Image 1 (cartoon, one colour):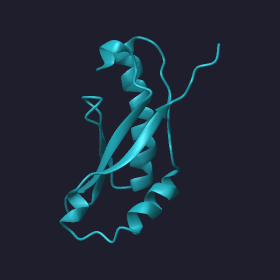
Image 2: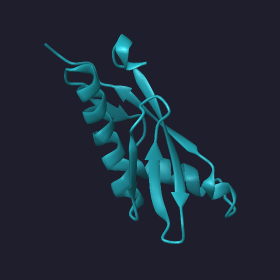
Image 3: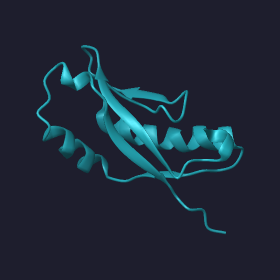
Length: 103
């Protein structure tokens, strides 16, 4: 996937794990990305930052991604879903778009 260069957008999967309610972001498109925290906003922000760092490392040059929505917009969307305990283990998605580099 990354051998053809960085994708223009990447989907992050979100889920809550365990009794401590660790908020975790991963991506099938970027193997190795697994970010978690007990603070959902910290996990969200760290996932976006780590995504750029990991893709940059794999591609050999700097790549920056920005979320398509703010943390608060993401959190509000989740709140509207009224999730049961079982559903909270399912993935919800945040898409991060590659920021165009200016020369």
